[in-house]
Length: 153
Image (tube, helix red, strand yellow):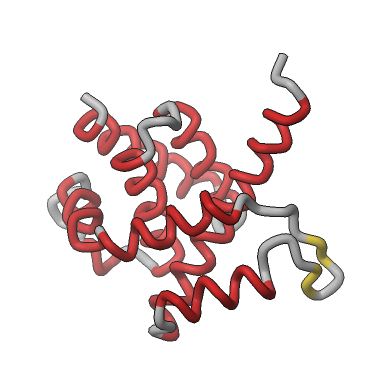
């Protein structure tokens, strides 16, 4: 059984993943410069209470790593995702929240070898739950699994 500190760290990382997807979405929608985006999330979102909903304290370093990593490697990540889509489906056809979930998950599979494949995919399925229904979870699962087979082979 995990220690209480491992459980707390796991929840903080889960909150960081969700916040990272939200930050990446905001960046794509509003073209917010990265330093401003990170500052805004650190000061107003991570662990804050918004509209009477208290957010779990997110691991700020993990959050920063995902957001900065996706930003730095966006072209590589997008090409990897596009390579696993059906032939008749283009990357641009994915809606914005889906793109961010897949980008964050792909980055984690590429760059965070300390996170087991199964854990990373499972966590992004939980993030998908925040935005979508069951059908989309299957899509995310299949796509991240296909990417994992390439980048963690």
